Length: 131
Image (cartoon, rainbow, N blue to C red; front, side):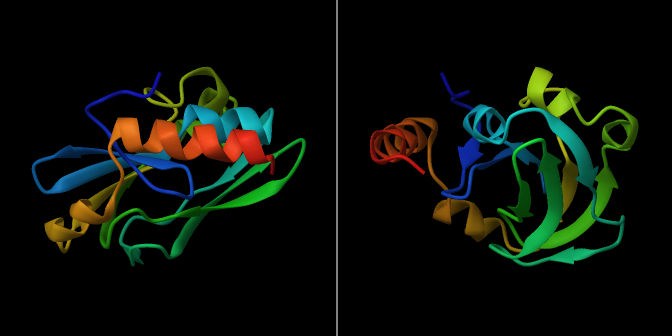
């Protein structure tokens, strides 16, 4: 259900690591909870992130939700396509719906993230308790 090669946060972000860079987005679970995404406030290239700190905002027909940085570092690329097509997050959350690329400042932080199996268990428990 959740891609095994990714790492996840309890705030429903995912990370795909390639060398010293991390591509970041929100999970399929998160986009389903939000409903139709209508706007994405992207970080700026050059912004620094702190693990767990807010770095983007996703607005849907249901809610406005902060996106938290799963890793610390510097934003080196953002998905400008989301400015005109925010619904891409709903259509392809693990592919074209990525939000930003962060150059890792502390790769050790990846150890704080959840595996796909751990994330699936986490959201399974959350779905049982409601939101």
